[in-house]
Each structure stands twice: as C-alpha cells, then as structure tokens.
Image (cartoon, rainbow, N blue to C red; front, side, top):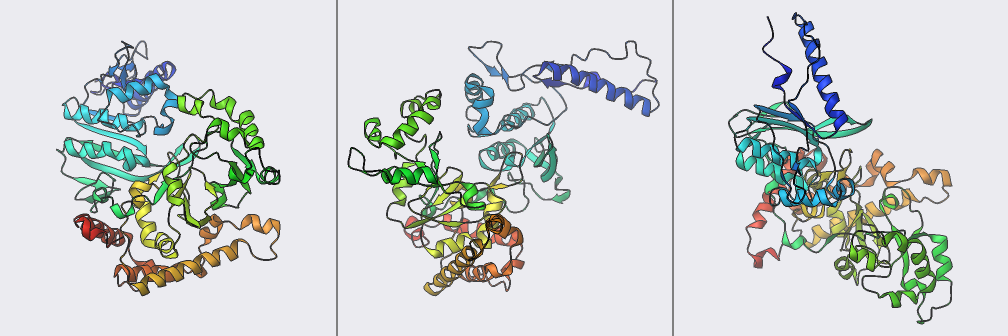
Length: 521
C-alpha cells in the first residue's frame, strides 16, 4: 500500500539554481524517511525522481520580457507556507539593483509601499492568490518589522480582503548565527472564525499583530507636527577627529574674512548618546553654499575634496554627485526649526533603551538620531515618562533581524497624545525632569573617576541597572497626575491599560475641531 501523500503534491519556487536542486533532494530525503518511519516500503528505482513541481523562477517578477516585466505566476495550491527572504526597504537598490527595484515598484504600484521591506511583496502576492481563489490559506514568517511602519500596510490590506486568524507576534529566532525576533502570520479569506494570537484564543488580531486594542487606528496629532525630525545624513567622510577640528579652528581667518568655525562643528551619532562622547566633529557647508563659497574655507574644503569627492562622484544620484561638498540630506526644515534654541532633545533611532538627552544647539546630530525641536524640561520629562515609553515601544518598528526597537517620528511621536497639565503640574514634571538629567550627568562623569571607570559609565549600562535613584518614579507620578490618572504606582500600571488610555485620548482629540485642538498643544 502506498501513502496518499507524495512529493509531487508539493509546489515550490526557488530563484537560486543550486538551492533549487538542493530543495528537490531535501524533499525526497524527507519523504523517504517519513515512509520508512511509518512502515511503508521504499522500492522506488531510481530512489529519487525528478521533482518538476519545484520551479526555478523569481517569485515576484516575471522578467521573460525585460522591457515589460509583470507579476510572477504562482502555481495553484491549497496552502502557501514559506520563509521569504528578508531585505530592508532601504537596501533594496543596493542588493537587487535599480532595474529590479524599478520593476517591483511598477508592478506592485499602489499595493506595496515603496518604503516596505522585500518580505512585504510576498505577503501581498499571497493575499492576491487567496482573494483570487488560487489558494485557501497562507502562513508566512517575517521579522517583527512586518507589523509596523510601511510594512503594516500589507497586513491592513490582508484584513480588508480577508483576515488574520493565527499569529505569533514576537518569537526568538536564529538567523545565520545571530539572535533575532520574528513574527509568524497565518491568513485566509476570512472563512476561519477562530483566532489565536501568541497561543491564546482572541476575538480579533489587528494589523499590528495585537489583540483587543487596535492601535493602528491612532491618528497623527497635528500639534506634534514639525517637532521630531530625522537628522542630517552626511553621505561621506565629513566627520573628523576633535584634534584635527581644533587645529583648523586655530588657523587665521580665510580669504573671505570668516573663521573655520562657520563650517566645522561638533558632531554626534548614536554611540555618543548610548556610550561615551567621542569628541567627533564634522565639516558642514550647510544646505545651499555654492562650491565657490565653500572653497573659501580652505582647509575644510580641501579635506572634503580629497576624502569625499572621489566617492560622491560615483553616486547614482545626480544631485549627490553634483553637490559633492554638501551633505546628501542636510535636513533644511530641521535646521530652520532649530534656529533660536539653546539646546534640543535627541534620542537614538534604534536602541536597547529609549533614552533622551539634551544636546547643545551648535552640535550636528547624525541621521540615526532623532531630533526634537524643543528646549523645555516639561517636554523632556513627558518624553522620558513610562507613558511615552510604552507607547513608543508598541507603535515603533524593530531593527530588521535584530532585537532593538526603532523609534519612528510618524508612528511613535506624531500619534502620541501629550497631557494637558495645569501650571503646577507642568512645573512638577519639569522639576523631576531636571533632577533626572542632573543625576544622570553626575553619574556619567563623576569627579575623580579613572579612565577605565568612565568607559563603563554609559547610558546603556545605567539603564541596564535602572537604579531607583533615577527618580523615574517621581517623574511618572507627575505625568500621571497631568493625565488625570489615579494609579497609586505608575510602574505597576498594566501596559495595555496605559495604551488603552492613550489611544482613547488620541481618538478623542482627533474628533476635536481645529479651534479646540490648539488648546491641547
């Protein structure tokens, strides 16, 4: 008696020729092992037969006519399962090339956001297979980023034409030896009525792979616009050591009568925030200085000409090649918004702990830091409260295959509803925030500390321990009071309770007329 299950019932798609051959062998070996373990006779000759149901093809694009690429055709199947390749949206062109990416954008235009990761295209393709009746159910694995940012749009579309019936939102995974966090998503046309999230039956699974609270409904708060910015992207080795910068600052004025301090300024990136300040500076010709004007700053310009220009001349973007002495994305809106401030708030886009720091206004922040154009302690205090931390962790994304959360200006900050404090409440938050900042600075740079000790004194190490003297408890009580929340211990308030309150406030504010919303700012 032969089993009713046979490898020919399995269809597959593989773009790599070697992997395509290996897949056939692996399927046959697994099938033969299963037969033997279940009492079936293995009498085939040859033992391994061709397995033509596994196709050698691109799963997303049919480029048989290079001039007119179209959507790839998948075989009909009852179920689709897979672990699509991960490639972050910002790396698509680097890894796949312009022609492939332009074809993807054209074929999937309006269906997959151009900022989405590669895996999002597989989710969308599977959704179309289900809605067209070619398959019944799909189960796909992805990194946690599938449930947030641009990627989440494909899950929203899945829920519009069908539904998610099974999900593991956060699972450990090992990818090429590195620990990662992944999500697993099962979806269909909506026929399955039972929903299981992280092993627990639930009424619904939202597009952020959460139950009950639909945080994807949170609306941007207009009063938060124009405050949080991605900072400057240099696009070359404009950054220099402090010793070199100070030697240029000591030079006589340039032929234009101006000092080098006009275009040489302190610079920080995420390491300077989470670890120790490295005394780095940067050459910064602003947003629109002409080549002739920049050349008048002799030493900095010559450095850029030697170290930056050769690489920028190879850049694919015409503007980056032409304006080689200007940073590729100097963020003029951010710079304009910072004018007149003595300091601003900064946080790393990706970090183990969500920490905020004060940065002097003359410092230029790297693009992996987010800049908040505010200089008041009240604002700093609310950002560092547990309310904002919980909101940002749930509303943010995750770094590719890594474990660290990513803070995004649109989802984490622009949707966050700030409290409406009285004057005394605002002052209490500001006072607690100032104390928090002073205590941290004293711990980071204590008088008499050795060089070896200072290396260990980083914000990451401090928040790994999170000692009670950090006064976060006092800060949270002040913020809770400003929201009108009466929990005796904010640290004990359930995360879902905090999120439900903030979501309700967000949605309530979203219904206010413009004349009333200005009072909330």
